Every structure is written in C-alpha cells, then in structure tokens.
Length: 400
Ligand code: C5P
Image (cartoon, rainbow, N blue to C red; front, side):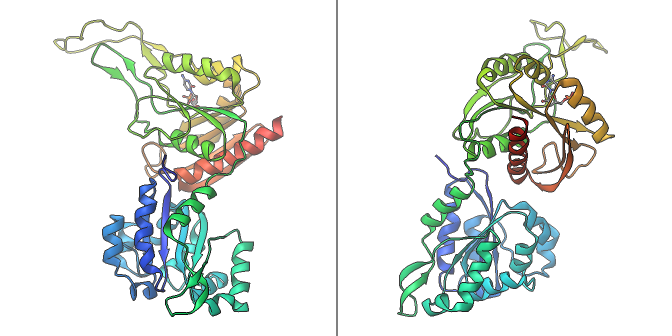
C-alpha cells in the first residue's frame, strides 16, 4: 500500500553533507506515490548537483529566486501553493535560523513564507551546533509554529565527532511524514463520497457526459481516509487510481450511482456529493447503433434523478454536503440549491475561471452553510480537500 499517493511534496535541500541522502529521499517519496519538486539553496548545490536531483525527480530543479526561466514555468508563489508538504531535508542550522527570522533572501526561504502547506524539517549539522542554545531556541520556535521536526539521529558524524545531528534516514522520513497526513479525527465515521461524471447512453456506442475529472472527489476521499474515516467512494468513469483504504464502487449512469448511494448510505454519517451527475438522460436508449444518415437527429432527454436530494430526504441522520459549479451569481445560486436540495452545506466554485475547477489541479471555492459562508482561496485540490474535511468536521460536530 502506498503511503503518499498523490501527495505533492516540495523537497527543500540546504547546504550540508547530508544533502547526498536527499537524492535517495526523492526516490523513496516517489516509491510511495508522491509527486516531488526539488528546491535547492546555493549551499546545497555545493554538495549535490541540481542535475542529479532533476534526473531523479524527473522535473527541473528550482534554485534561484530570480531565475526567469523557472518563474516562466512555475513561479515561486505558484510552487509554494502547489505543495501539500514542504519538507526541508537536510535543514542546516543556518537555514533553520533563517526560517525563524522569516528571511526571504533565498528561493526556499520565500517558499517557506508563502506556502499554506504543512512544513517539516529534518535537521542535519555538527552535534555542537545542534546543542547550541541558539539552535535549540530556533528549533523550539519552529515547533511552536507547528513545523514538524524529524530527528536528528545520533552517531558518528561526517567530521568524525560522535553525537546528535545526523539527518535521519530516508525511510524514517517517509514514515514520519505519511503520519502527518493522518489526522484520525474522523475515526468511527462513515463518509460516502460521489465523484466524477456520469454517462448516459444514447445507443450501444454513444453517450452524453461532461468534463468532470473526478480529482476533487478523489482528493476528498483521500483526505477523509487520512482522517481515519470509513470511506465509500462511488465513482463515475475517470482516469484516476482508486485511493487505497476505502470501499470503492464503480458506476456509469446516474441511475446506477443513485442505487449505489442509497444502498450504502443507511449506515453513513456524512455524504459528500462531488460527482458531476448528468442532469438529463436519454428517454429511450436505442438498442441498435443510431444511423448517421439524417442531417438532424432529435433526442428526447428526461431529467435524471437528483441523487443528493434523494439521499438527504431518505436519510435524515446524514450530514449532506453538495457542490455547486456556477458561472455567475455563485453565492445566490448556491444558497438556492442548499435550500432546495435540503443540504447542510454547499461548496461553490466558479466555472467561468479557466485556472481552477474542472480538470484543473487547483481550486478556489466558497463554503456556504445555514449560518455562515467563507472562502477557501486558490490552493491544490489535495490541500483544499483537507481543509474541506476540517470544515465538515467542525460543522458536523456543531450540528450533532
Ligand atoms: O443542480 P446541480 O447539478 O448544480 O447540483 C450540484 C450538486 O448536486 C452536486 O453536489 C451534485 O453531486 C449533486 N447532484 C446530484 N444528482 C443530480 C444532479 C446533481 O446528486 N442529478
């Protein structure tokens, strides 16, 4: 089982002999399903060549804050927002001190300040430097800011001294960071999630569908699994790998999705309707392939069942969260849907923007419930999913 499926990790490498272990770390992170982008400080480049890290990660390495080429690809702020975790390994005494002071004079320093992601450091330095009160105070400050500190190990150091300050091994780092993604807050809670599009057949070879990629629903399923929930993911046809650790049901049409949803939701606590259900199905599906001789073809469409409305009505115990994709009057239409479909909360996203939503890896959404509304600014769908799960958790407990 992969421990870091689809997690986006920005690996920051700072100057120290332990930088050679980061090359191995890139591989171990990828082995566990993570996507890795490497950022190196000038000090790190003295120990390991960016080319090594580029070959291992399969992506260009980010080095300079004012690198026009890198900025034209993925700018440093965009990179900071891309990540689910900023992992700095090795983290030198100097870089830790820079983090404490919020210095943005290096690319990695700027990313640390700009990222909404989890942050973790694996310190590596001489044992006297590690034990120095300045370093101890700095590390305490980072811990107070919720930065996870991994290690260091004790043992023989590169300089020949013996003591604490060695960077822990790549396997241990991978194990520890995969634990960060598990919050355990949804232990004992059954969450049913729908994702992806549905397909409505016209004839044996054609169908009506939509552009939904399923990424948001799958990210929510992963976040709920990480939070310890019992997850049932009911998915329409998508090109995504099913998340490990959930009950997975594959469906095609809206009718099939409805039956699956009603069957599994009796024992559920939370229902999240992230699927883009086809609003209409073909009234009479042709058993034979429809001939293409005529200039025009008229099809009669009939409204598909409203899955979320049906489940909200049938199982009153459920905390039901819907999605609303709107191109105008976002909040107004979302509120109408909240009322009409009997939802507890609705997550609205603006499909008029090309940089977020459908098929994109990022999203920006509004959360609207009966008492409040708030905006989750643009971030990766993985990060957004974690934030949505936290918000659902708050509202769910508040409503109980
Ligand atoms: O009405 P609209 O499609 O905009 O509503 C979106 C919300 O309703 C989503 O949560 C979607 O999963 C759900 N829905 C549904 N069944 C339908 C249509 C939408 O569950 N037939």
